[in-house]
Image (cartoon, rainbow, N blue to C red; front, side, top):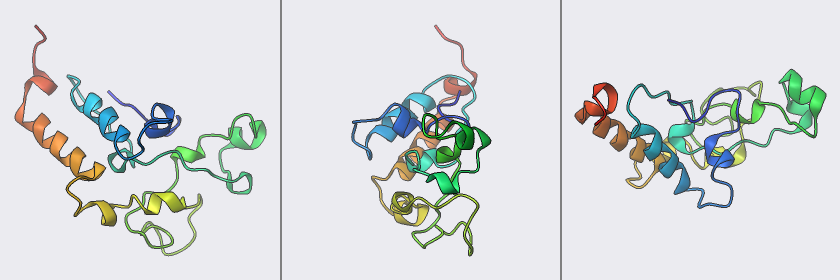
Length: 142
């Protein structure tokens, strides 16, 4: 099971438009982690990252270049993972091939790891819950 991947708008934006941007990713993740079977977590979903706004001049996706502005391409979900709130998000010391979304730095791992109410720590709790309940990954449905 997966809610996002490198070809679709991030789930926090795709399904959570108009919802609380800090709470809604947890709802999506709770749904995902409660499904029986294998779970695939796309990078950044554990932080609740929304879709990044990549300006046309920084677009790398060939579809985004050709179909702009009707389709901005798939780069909005492919931006670097923010590990810290530094200019490049701790992803790189130099400018990465896709820009670091400023709002993503506010959701960086370094900002969430010590916050008991963060999306990152909610994911850690949900993963621990899955590990304790075999029926979620290998059980029968009745």
